[in-house]
Amino acid sequence: MPFQVAAVQLSPKKADYAHNLGRVGEIFAQADAMTPRPDVLVFPETVLSGYFLEGGVRDVARTRENLFRDLLDQYRKHVRSDRPMDVVLGFYELYRGNYHNAGLYATLTPLEGCSLQPCVRHVHHKFFLPTYGVFDEKRFVSRGRTIQSFDTRFCRAAVLICEDVWHSITATLAALDGAQVIYVLSASPGRDFVGEDLGNLARWKRILPEIAAEHNVWVVYSGLVGFEGGKGFTGSSCVVDPWGKVRVMGSVLGEEIITAPLDLDEIAVARAASPMLANLNSALPDVAIALDALAKRPHWNRSEAFLADDIAGPMPEPDMRQEL
Amino acid sequence: MRHLPVIAAVPPDPSSDENLAINAPLLEEWLVAFLQDEIVRRRGFQKAVVGLSGGVDSSLTAFLCAKALGPQNVYGIRMPYRTSSKESLEHAQLVVDQLGIQCRTIEITDAVDGYLKFEPEADGRRRGNVMARMRMIVLFDQSAALRALPVGTGNKTERLFGYFTWHADDSPPVNPLGDLYKTQVWMLARHMGVPEVIVSKPASADLIVGQTDEGDFGISYVQADRILYYLLKGYSTEHIINMGFPADDVALVQQKVASTHWKRHLPTTAMLSTTSINDYYLRPVDY
Image (cartoon, rainbow over all chains, first blue to last red):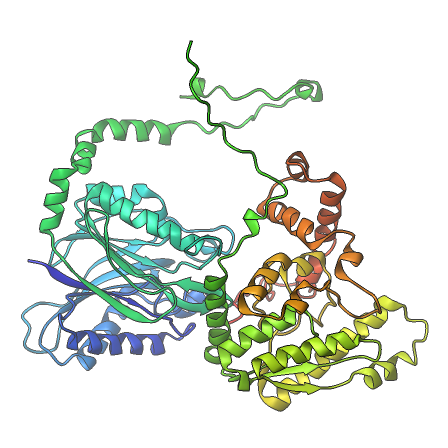
């Protein structure tokens, strides 16, 4: 049975948690009245604060418990029906003394008329923190250390955040862990106006269909919009099917909701036609051995002292075979 | 023996402008959105004030502002000095007429000469800096009078060359063109319909009679931008020369960039604590 997802692209008010939370509440109300009504609402990375905060991360970060309570309050304030809704949302989290760029997956329920228990099903901490060029995440937040899939009401899923997905191995790990849907939360600043698309967007348009098609999973991407200090985010939220086909895509600049049904049967059909994930699973022990060897490879660095005469000629190349 | 056809990669062509090409319609849409977001949404202004010099940078900025805010909300301020060329005023008027924006002409001669009469030995550079700073006094005062945000017009090439007066041309809080090389400004200006007479004339700061940017630089914008493209990407000067660029041109461009980093920063403050602003205490501009 398909379930309906909706990705919401918003332009948050900088560092104003209460205002942005209120807008999320308004979206709950709009979604509740939509036909078909979304079962899962997906908000972008850092939607409650804006992305570029520098030291301001500590001002706006919330614990997952506080955020969950606030989201539940908003849901119960704005939603008139007696139906639950799942929400995936990016925020800065304070977790056990560390700040993280995080993505939460929760099930929200009305106060009455619903037998489901509201709950937080998973919180992902961004695994790859971009710290180059315009990005400076490692200075202000700590890196997540796990890629995990988890069970939801509809299927097994994973949450990844922005640069996480620029390393194809994260989607591979999520798929190996059983994810049928990968929710990607993003705040991607636009750059390079040479081609038909912005440079970063062209990259997303290659990456998302590739990870969907390689692992035959659904991919739901939610992108921030608006400008922060001259840097504009490129929206383009989308849903990609397990064949790698983009089913729906939002605009680059506008605040909007894009929505599509996700039919899990399509995963099985696609995997039967192109069993890449099964092939990877069968080869996994050998892949693991290769990865383990790479991880344990000694780092090459010329540590012994040397004299000026030693570098009269070209520096010797490292012999990697010895180190392996 | 039958030889197979060989298909070889073409090496980079130093005379190609492929790297500097822009998707002009996409860029226009983006910069209009940028101005709407930064001026209206983030700062709460409905109007903008632009110093109109008659050159391509300020003309293009006026075109973008008119599209972003509506021509009735854009104020073009012409600020001639007595030695400014008549052509500059006329070209600024072309922009005003074509866009239908508001316009005012405020001559800065009395204000500039009021100070310079005490400094009769001031050379052209000093006099030019006084004029540029006086224009910013006027622009920011008009901003207060009109409740309109000053919008900057500096392009990436002149910013990289330090070819501006510190805390003058670079002082408006919002700048749509600062990450566009001059040759890219020309492309976008042509796309948006800036009068060709403005786009194709030699760029000039018009601070000294007969002055042109390229005359001051000693290199054309076209050649400078091609070299800057590779330099800013991180290629070494040796690598750029090996690609076929003249060593003198590369050295000139590299020296101009390397000697002007300070102009692209706020003043240097002595750091004394672990809460030093912009060293330890870090908040973005729109926080």
